[in-house]
Image (tube, rainbow, N blue to C red; front, top):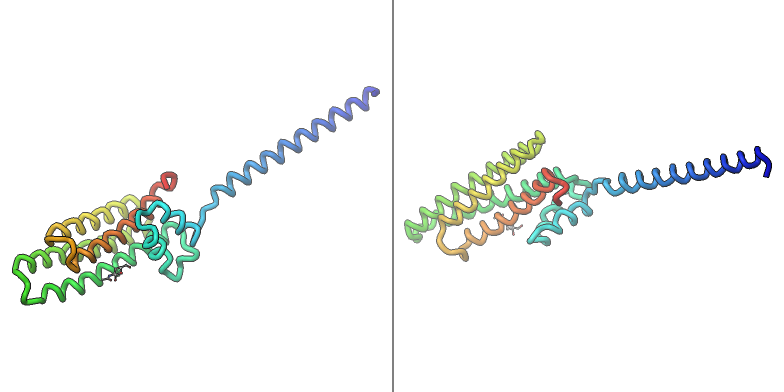
Length: 193
Ligand SMILES: *[C@@H]1O[C@H](CO)[C@@H](O)[C@H](O)[C@H]1NC(C)=O
């Protein structure tokens, strides 16, 4: 090989190596970006609910809205909070009927009244949670939801036993709030999901 042929060969080799490196970088970039692509809708719902102790209910709740199929994490949080708030309204209506029963022991009646107050608080705290999310105050949202869960505890403590209608309903309500809590936690701290 004469001098210039050698030079050409080396140059060619350089170009080949550089092209390969560039391709590798592109591939790596593609993987990173592709892997970080945020899922939405059903994929996201399954991902979020995989961490739920009530997985079926979680999927059912998060899929219940017309926007569920395209929802991002924040939208899913709002969907779950609305379901929980609606549930609270239903419970409040039932509680009213229960309290109006004249045959009830005054102590039980008082307990039901206390519980009702707390479910009412929880319902408005859920609305506050939604409002906080709307303005991207994820930390506040977590605090409001925590307050709602505490109100459910107080309600439960004011009614004896756990197989009466209200206790059963409050247990479901708590599950709904816990689902919202799961979504909000992942929203506030996506790496821990
Ligand atoms: C609360 O939600 C549960 C689960 O979706 C449902 O079965 C129940 O009927 C609801 N209760 C009220 C009072 O809305």
